[in-house]
Image (cartoon, rainbow, N blue to C red; front, side, top):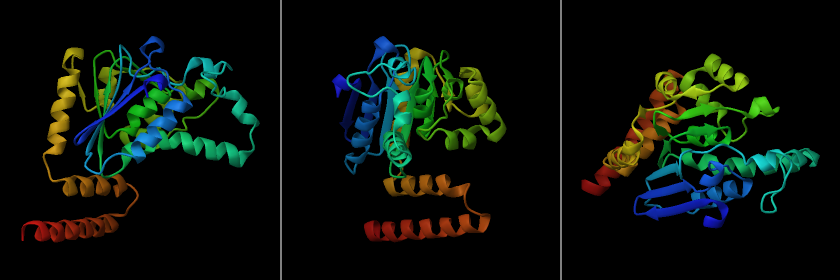
Length: 256
C-alpha cells in the first residue's frame, strides 16, 4: 500500500495504520479510504487493537489539496466534479468513503489514534473515528469542511457531539477554528497529552492495557457504551443483562 501513502500491518493482536505521505502532511485521498475499508474488512479475527498514526510531523492535513483545487491525483477525480453525478450515485460513493473510517468503531476492536501536529478535516474525522486519542502538545484539530462550503461526511459528526456536546461541536465545526492540545484534553477530545518522544511508548502501554482483559469482555463493554446514548435507562439495563448473560455462558463453557 506504500504507493497509496499507507502502511498497513498486522502483528498478532495489534494492527497498525500509518498514513505515509509526510511530504504533504499525510493528506488523504479517496484511494486511501478505499484501501482502509479493505484493510478493515480483512482483519484477522484475533486482532483486538488498531493503532492509527501519521508519519512525520503531522497526523493528517485532511483531503489532498490538489483534489480540492480541481486537479486529479493519481487519476482520482477532483472533489468538486463529484457534484455532477446523480444523487444516488454520489451518495453511494460517499458511503464507500465513509467505510474507510467506520470500521474503526466496531465492537471487536479498540482503536487508538496517535496524534501529533495537524489533524485537519478528514484527519480530524479519522482521529474521531478511533475510540481513544493520545496526542502530543503540538497537536491541533480543525474541522475545515464548512469553511470550504462542505460538511464533515466521514463519520466525524456523531463522535464529536458525543465527546464535547452539541453546542461546542457546532461552534468547532462552523468556525473551523483550531482546537489545540490543552483544550482538546479539557474538552475530552484527547485521553492524554504526552511529549512527542513518549507518544509511541504511551500508545504501546495503552495497547497492552486494552489487551489485558478477556476479548469477549472488552467487545461486550464497548458495544454497551457505544449504544448507551441511544437507549433509555431501562433499555440499557436490559442490554447489560443480555451482555452479562452471554459472558457468563461463555466463561462457564471455557472454565466451568
